[in-house]
Image 1 (cartoon, rainbow, N blue to C red):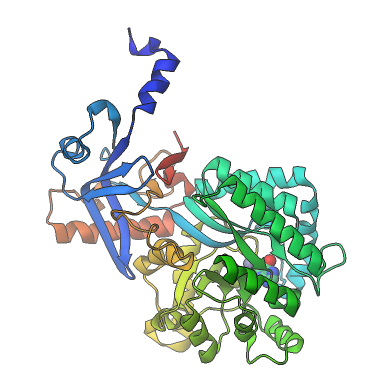
Image 2: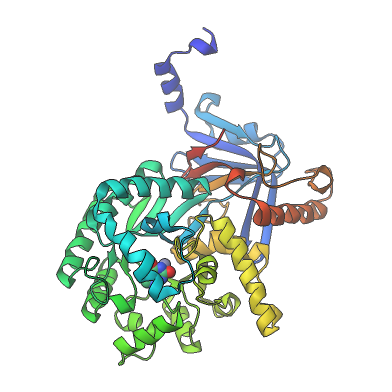
Length: 479
Ligand SMILES: O=c1[nH]c(=O)c2nc[nH]c2[nH]1
Ligand SMILES: [Zn+2]
């Protein structure tokens, strides 16, 4: 029988027999802040649960190594060799720790607004239209499509106040195979009449979303709920305290905005005069903890920064959004030096791009702007630093750093295959700049690889993302 006539049911059976996959090629990651590591001629074995079983650098015979390791037969193992190009490599999937899925149609539309008028003019009117589930279906499919195709393997999503549309976002992420935290927005004060809920409504729809998400993915393998008080100005004390209790009772993730804009901070102080600081409002409401994500954190005091470190709360740095709606420059090195966890967020549509790669580049440039103002070189972030924030930093902030962000045994195979010399690539590579694996000494090849990564970060885009894997499963492949 020719290959061409292989019957479909037998092909499916052959696939069923696959128990293990071995990927062979170059793997690049940042095991520590500021340190880039390129593992070359590397075999990475992935088991049926999507977990990395071995990482073997300089593997002479990856097929023999895999068969010896697994004790499986040839038919039970899939071999994927991506060593056909010197500028093709795996990097960990990006983790977007702050993105508003319903705001996606507004990407790029913000005019000259700043946060408070931007919310009124652009954001609330769009979000309120998500009571229409057919609109939500169209937009949420597009968002997951776009983020996956930019290499985002995990995202912490804000949705809207609507339970039905929020449940749909969970279904879309699950169906498309993206790892996602699903946040029903809770907001019961200082919001327009057409887009507000009562305390009771907020509680009921929050519980409904939790029930739905947990029923769809009972083990939380891919999707799970995240409690999402929009920000202190739009929530009453009793709503935040109820969410705080709920968070503690079931160890839920939590996300909100903090210290983004000077007027927002004034409003928070006016509304909550009995608290020591904006951060203290969340702290006293029981919302801070190791699974809490705080977007922006630009204008924090020393005391607030220490509160984040003490509670293990993480920051989502959103430099694209902060530059677009003129919010300010977050002091990332200052946070990192105090052991505050930091990650990256696209913050669409305060930010205009769904690409974490673009945001990483903006994080670097914003850090340079801080240096120009302070003349303090320590603020500067390198390409390795921002790649760390986009991967390992994201895993830390989601409290998933024991399973995401690196190529390491026991970690999940959430990864993107990058190719710089693909058709239509925005990156120009030249043979004399390429690392010649195995033909130059290791030190030289690492230096050259650093150049390639820098080129990728500054000049690359979604065209360079050729394939995306989540939990060991291929969820997107471009031909
Ligand atoms: O960047 C932001 N996007 C929002 O939607 C929002 N809501 C409150 N504060 C916010 N900041
Ligand atoms: Zn936001």
